[in-house]
Image 1 (cartoon, one colour):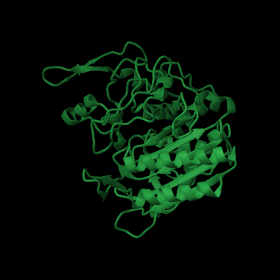
Image 2 (cartoon, rainbow, N blue to C red):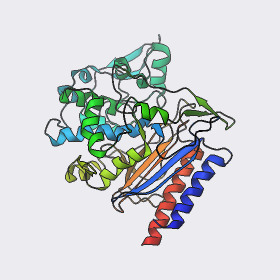
Image 3 (cartoon, helix red, strand yellow):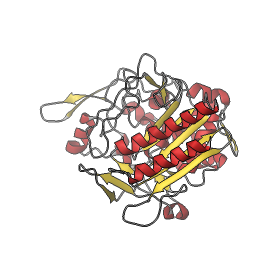
Length: 395
């Protein structure tokens, strides 16, 4: 990238943390197949305290965890240990006991019935199994409020045992399918997900700053979570996930640095090859990076919990599918991201994309609720646009 891009990116980060309204702090990185081409940080790790945000700051990754857990699933597919289209209950019988929610009766009790078909591991990875999240589903939010259904982020087995919102395969809805996929991985590999990911993904990629439980070094660099109020102001809030949960939630419980996550993104640029060895086969990467939704499209997600998330949709008006396990934009995005690129996000306003055609990938990290915060999101989109402007200048 040229100096003009670095200057533009630096200016975007400064504006995000100094404008009105603002974000507390941000880290942004851009990489190509050969390495990191830009890293920048601005603002502070926690409002009211002096520690500046730095490129090695550690973040709660939220749903950026999903692609990492999905990678472990794909490794077992390569080994012939998972058939993506077999009933997932073959590997994890508990999945076979789940029922479909058909509304509530006059007493407020949920109406449940057996699903018309089995959940498969492919459905878990595509978000077509029928699972949701309570902040995007009024029915699941009602179950939590009236029936004590635990928040899935708490790492309780009962938090996974939510009813399905529709028959498996009938629709796309964003939810806890990848958390269930992580349990499939545990059942087959015979170990807990933290150990599996460390051995199979983090070690080969040199991701020493990524884990479900922060190391002492990671704790000293942890960025605090913040909440934006209705007046646009920001307050630091307490946010910690259980360190000894019943279930490691592979869909959203990892902590990590931006530099580590860029190593993971660059593995996808390099056909599954990381700095320390091969993680996936080239043909697996190509397969996973294409749209697997047949006759379905990724839909806008309407918020029912405004403190956690705004309504969420990337690139409205553009057709979007889903790979294993990323969003696939089927048309070129206004930022310059070409059709067929993959990417996604995390609830704390973390965003990334992987452009295998041009060989670039970017990561943007904040710690801020609600998701899709306009300041953070607009900053990310401006950063991505600046990257493609630079690619255009380079030809």
